[in-house]
Amino acid sequence: MARLELNNLHAEVAEGDEKILEGVTLEVKSGEIHALMGPNGSGKSTTAKVIAGHPAYEVTEGEVLLHLEEGEFGEGIEIDEDHRTWNLLDLEPNERAALGIFLGFQYPAEIDGVTMTNFLRTALNAKIEEREELFEDDDGDEDADEEADEGFETSPMEGPADEGEVGVAEFQQILQEKMEALDMDEMFAQRYLNAGFSGGEKKQNEVLQAAILEPSIAVLDEIDSGLDIDRLQDVSDGINALRDQEGTGILQITHYQRILDYVEPDHVHVMLDGQIAKSGDASLAAKLEDKGYDWVRDEVYGTA
Ligand code: ADP
Ligand code: MG
Ligand code: MG
Image (cartoon, rainbow, N blue to C red):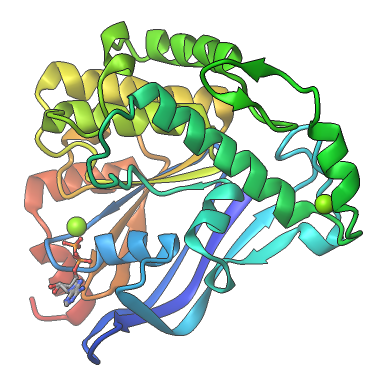
């Protein structure tokens, strides 16, 4: 079990003093699906980026905590008292990711000759290595680590895999499984990073990346935008599978109700002016679809 906790989070633009988030409080647990909805400009994406540690924003108040329970990362990693609660605002973005927070596909600039397969395997291994470092007891025994690496699995293409790393052959198998589950074309994996992916393919890629990293909590920002109905169905199946098979908690940011017909939320939150103005169950999303956001504003500010 993992639990992401946002407490009275205030954030502004790093260069300047424009306030964007003005006290966001929200909790997402493993296995739960939360929809974060709201009009354009209300602060949804900023919330996602602050959780990710985006440098464009400065947190001025509040906290972002991640609580972990024993067993979250399987047998190999012991979650003792010292490693149970993490203050994410003190950590680098890649450290947050290593702790199981997934923040969507940060598309790197186009890199020549890097296939999706290589990119995804590198991302998975970087996460494994970073996590080992975060949980490592400071025994300073680097020599022993290095000795353990020697003679480990070797591939002529990739050089030796480090201890704990996922090798090429093993990764192929993982990738194939995940792509089948997502109904993705095999050729996809051989394509070059970022080269001519359509909007829909990028979104599907994002879900594939999440499926491979098996996050504790995934924040998906407008993953439904610009998808045709078939692709929306595939992407939704992927999100549901993440929850059902990996127990991932999902924070699904969306402006529209449409995807919530396929990914049914346990909780729905409406963001207005940098705060969560109202929360409810799935019926709240249906009401928003019907009546828009103005009635929430009227209710909150009493301007009706
Ligand atoms: P949403 O995702 O709900 O549409 P955003 O979080 O993207 O909203 O933006 C919330 C508000 O903050 C908007 O008014 C937006 O213009 C402003 N904003 C967000 N990021 C920046 C930035 N880097 N610099 C200046 N203003 C920003
Ligand atoms: Mg947005
Ligand atoms: Mg060591």
